[in-house]
Length: 248
Image (cartoon, rainbow, N blue to C red; front, top):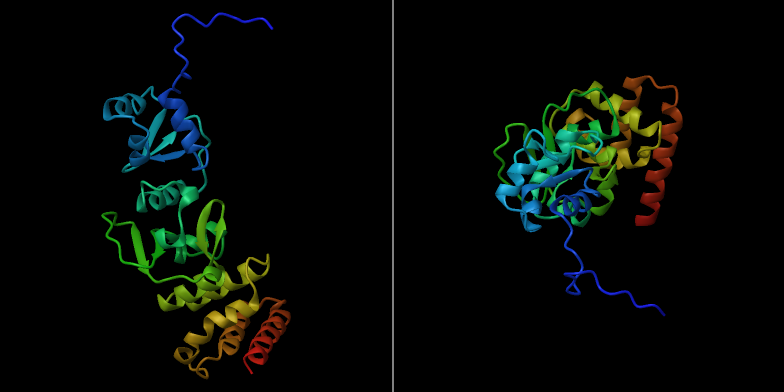
């Protein structure tokens, strides 16, 4: 076998990747976004970062401590994603848990494309209170169960039934909540029975029998006038009957 002489200056070590290539690899699973903490953890100092964020550099600042690779496609909900990354800036997106922040309320509805409520603030649910200096970020304190959120477009997002319940706690317009419900059930983002379950704590406030989530769901669906509302109610009733039978 032929043996080629080593390249002059070769010392047996692999060449260290450039700062930009390391950033590109890190940002690949974060929609082209990086936090300053992540950049610093890669050994990139403030001088190099200043050069990378110059007018001809490879990074642009999209929020305090959050940057985007200019060669990467602009992701949907860019501002929301940047705000979510700010919650735990040293933890990569793919390593986070629900306890580190779940997109919720109007922001979650916006990610799904449900209803017509403007998402003028970035809303997140966390199990413990956390301070934020951003006036456009609202933190809700609540521990979410595993079945109350999903991964959607790379973000942890509350399910539509949880969104609707959260909006009711916030005293949102009932007609807006009703539209969100129909928008979620029609493409099967969530199920009528799950909405009935989530509405049980709200029934008495609407003048219905305490815990009667089915009746409250019927009230909302009647408000929409959707032609599928009777079929959806049949599904919800069957769900509740199964759950009641399992408990007895």
